[in-house]
Amino acid sequence: MIKAGPTGLGPVKDAIETLEDYKKLGFTSCEVLFTYGVYIQKKDAELIGEKAKELNIQLSIHAPYWINLNSKEKTKIQKSKERILKSCEIGHYLGAYRIVFHPGYYAGISKEETYENIKNAINELQEVREKNKWNPELAPETTGKKNVFGSVDEILQLTKDTKCSFCIDFAHILAREGKINYKEILQKFSKFKKLHIHFSGIEYGEKGEKKHKKTETAKIKELIASLKKYAKDKEIVIINESPYTIEDSIKTLKYL
Image (cartoon, rainbow, N blue to C red):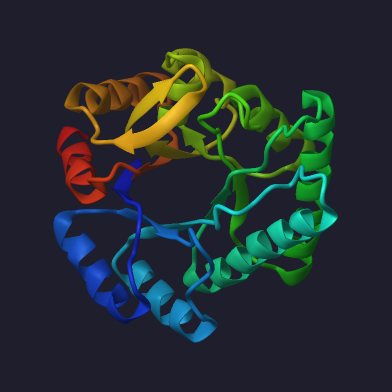
């Protein structure tokens, strides 16, 4: 089963209507953006979550961008944890199944030490999440810049060491590596029954990602063909992150 939909739900006051519009367009997933902060309160989250469930739209959350679990400043790490945990709390009431976030930066720290710092932070987050019985899984994302933690192998290792989930952003992988080997990547995640995927067009240079752009039709077809070939019998959610997320999500559904 492959679900597809856009990133972004918009203002709380319009959320129910937006979900109904998404349903009419055929969307079966949506990622709520907490880009600059968690803007939905518990009461509203419960109502939005009920509507999403009624419409069979799978919600996920992108936690705030201001997250770094490898900072040299302890206060920044603590604030980052608080943002992720707040996303988990509200995500629980929304019925969201994953909390996507960018784990952190190398920032002059060795890759080995960076990994240990991020791993330990996620283990601590897992303890709090489990203690509170919040349902959404933590999903560190593959990142698009070469000086930022989040290669495919780093994210995969985190799933083994912390029992967290993940988000495979193929646009970021293209920007980071200069190519996408769908077969190799999907085989690395073959043991998982559920795949959460981000996809869009992307501009990139020597250092990696520059910005997201409109998704090319050929790229959408390549993604779908690869998923059907190398990720059979899996539950897959595709979230389009292009500046034209609605249009490109409709196109994704068309080729599905």
